[in-house]
Length: 89
Image 1: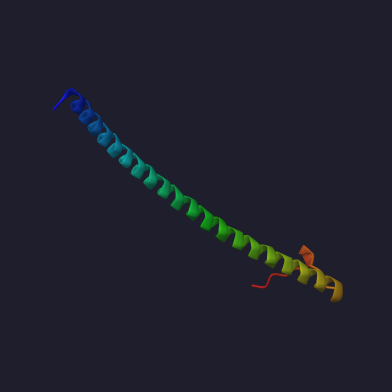
Image 2: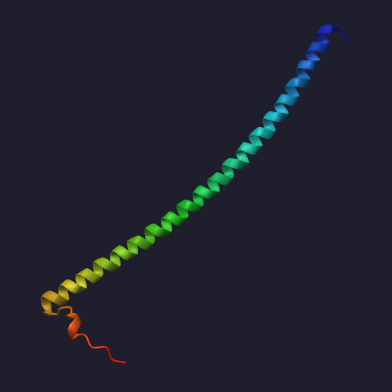
């Protein structure tokens, strides 16, 4: 084996080792990003559930306000004062 072939062989060995290290690093980074992706998806799902709950609450409160307005306008109903309320046990 000549001097040039020895240098070429050494270069190839270093290149193979560097390639192996790069593969391990890329795999580790991929796993870390996958874990982060799963966490972000979980947060998105929780935010979607909260959004749905808030939309439902908004619709419910809007309906309650509408019922209160109709009761007040059409039926002349009003909320009783504190002294008008009797607790029955």
